[in-house]
Image 1 (tube, rainbow, N blue to C red):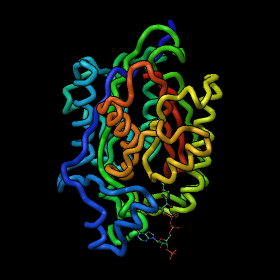
Image 2: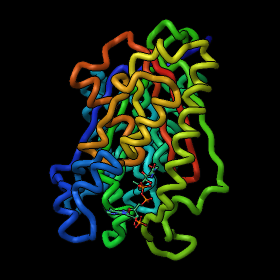
Image 3: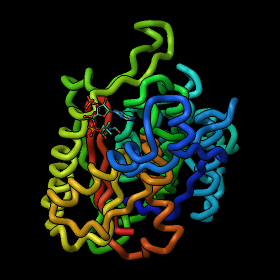
Image 4: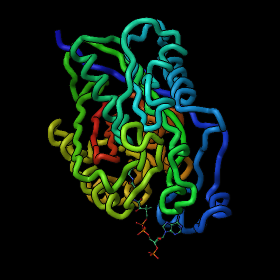
Length: 324
Ligand code: UT7
């Protein structure tokens, strides 16, 4: 029996505290104007003291369950993408599982940094297509504020905290570009580029958490090339042309990356969902946060064709073609 997966609901959560660019300019040598001009970011949400990735993931997961009309006890898979887990182990997904009261199936984390949600979606989609699960909660959740060097202006102004989730349900029959569902996923990584974007700590190397380090200009260059290529890969492998795409739901790192990628792909910029102004870069949370925002405000409608894409540390990158 062939199966495919359908996204039947989505949800998100943002910490209450909003930090405007001006507030950062009071503590590091930066300005509202520089941040807006170079990134498009105006503000970001920052988790409260003691508020963890699990808290954010749980809230987004609950919102997705409610939106989908599925009970936690009917879940049999949680795949959670994060680079900022509560603990080295156990996986944050298992803590979310316990809080939701899900007793069966499996819950685990996937780690692909900013591409994490696309990776998690691909993993869950493949589990469902293989018939190994029926209802999967796919979450992207991060508290990057905890791994930022707040004295480094080249990185600390770029990121925020948040979480987004989707409910993926198995349905009979193979995926088809004309019907609702996850039509394809394409993943890539190239470990040679580790030094452009990494955290300078970890349990096995320094026995400390460490801080995010990035060669921004290098990452920018690779991001536009890799994102355009993995979107093209999705279009070509499904015989879809760029003008058939209703919405691009991209990873939200920098408005200039969104614009440059759209230009390279000859995609209408009005068809690109952008939340970077209000959320900044929330790593694995950014794609499901952008998706939930645009579904919530009515831009994304059932039946429309979406392309999801992301690129992050590793490097890792990926795309998914979805009929909403
Ligand atoms: O999510 C994972 C993927 N991550 C990304 O995709 C991030 C990709 N990179 C970027 O978005 C951009 O490269 C940045 C936003 C990080 C930087 O923008 P840029 O236009 O590439 O600037 P730059 O790094 O070339 O720096 C330009 C100048 C430098 O000064 P000099 O050397 O020209 O005097 C920096 O020191 O801007 C300076 N600068 C700042 N000035 C004020 C760097 N950060 C700041 C700051 N405020 N926050």
